[in-house]
Image 1 (tube, rainbow, N blue to C red):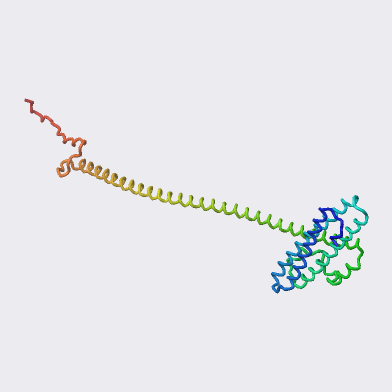
Image 2 (tube, rainbow, N blue to C red; image 1 turned 30 degrees about the horizontal axis):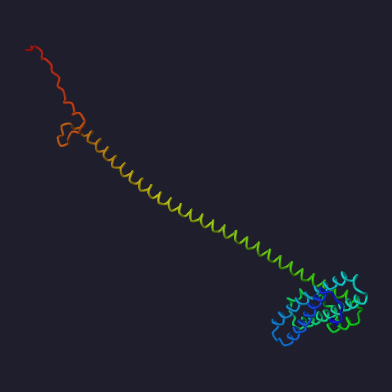
Length: 269
């Protein structure tokens, strides 16, 4: 049908990109049937979800292009372009419903953030496809836009969670770095205190040795003074004792004086 449409080069390029994505989605879901590992299936679904998001963006660009060029196109061309747009939205919705089916089969909780408006009370994938076939073109457009908006909101919420997680991690890392630096400073201060204590201990030992030496000297001087005093006392008490030498600088004891007197009747010569 695309070859029969009269489109501008810009719309034709967008249309070609959308069709390429649809072919990639078809091949991706075919490969998904052959994958048995649930983790690989989850990764494949995430990749297909990203392609559906790109497809939604391109459909919006295609719709804006139709509105911008609508005034210069014949009415028949505009009708064909709108029909093609609605057909692409319907095809995208079918891949969305198919993705929901695989998600329910895999039961991967991580992909719930990218759920395009799915809920417990919604009909099954087959009922969604049947319901889409019974909708009018405008209803299909509105439903597709609503589903894509819900997908964008879910993705934005996921981004906010990721940003908040990164912010918390950054703050935690900064706090840990500050605590590590503080612990380093405490260790350095403890080393300084330990060094000061060792120096103080050595100083106390030196002072103790000096005090002990001073006490010995004072005791020796005290003994010398006591000896000198003893000698002086002995000299005073027993001045005729020749066994004790005179103390240098000390005057010898004064000899005892005898009083002379004249007997009665005697005359001096």
